[in-house]
Length: 364
Image: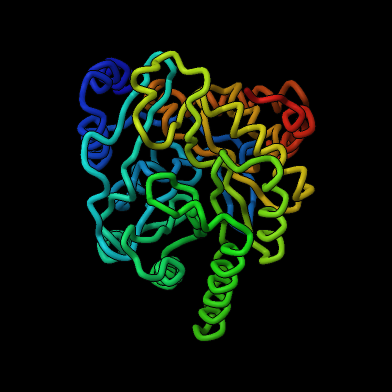
């Protein structure tokens, strides 16, 4: 019954302004109105960074910026989710309109600009959360910050007690200059300080746990630059790499008028670009660092492809806008079916099995 109502509601949500539709979705989740996203299966379980993931499906950052619905998302069937991106101080983000659907392309362009209520509001919501699933806090810097590195360090310190792992967002195209932090020299400065802060927390706080740190990269990094970036991530012993954020590319889009909007593009058109970069990252790291694959996942087949390209975990967002919550069920079924067909005892046996094939693809 509930699943049917959600199916009927999706066209109505797509007819609304994107941000209004998003707010209605959050309120529904807060009120417990959501279908269950399929049964978990022991073959979908993994332990990554010492954390137990009931399944590899995560809700990507940007959906729950202020930590309002982490509990409902876990109950809905996600194995993990990200809260944020959160900045030290509240900020409104860019002027509206700032979110645009490209329905024919199954894509979205956003230039939100890290709109969020800040550290204090998120911390207040998460202080008493129960651990139904694995939670990442996605941290960023305020647009007008005088010291962006300090903003990231502040986020690490503020949420160390409530996060299961951290995502360092240096790849959003909607904060001017933020992507500059992906340059090798800038990475050295940022990660050197972050890792120092984490080590200090562990030293200072008795029985403080080790919190993994993952860095989220942009899909627009050129082929020649990527190896140097990965080398710096490895040198600083980051625990994970997330591939990828939204793209500035507009190649191959049907909706050329909406494509003129500035901002990052997510959804189906990002799939091949982000998956090829994921596979190259898997090759460059030789599979030694867990990767999270994001970008264009809107079916069981595309979810499986991310794992085959090298992801240990995957994240969704835009695909849910167009496919609805049944997407979770469909992905889980497809992954279980693949395990059955190949006599795999764990979905982890899929990871990287087609990385070379994906890395060799020519992306237009």
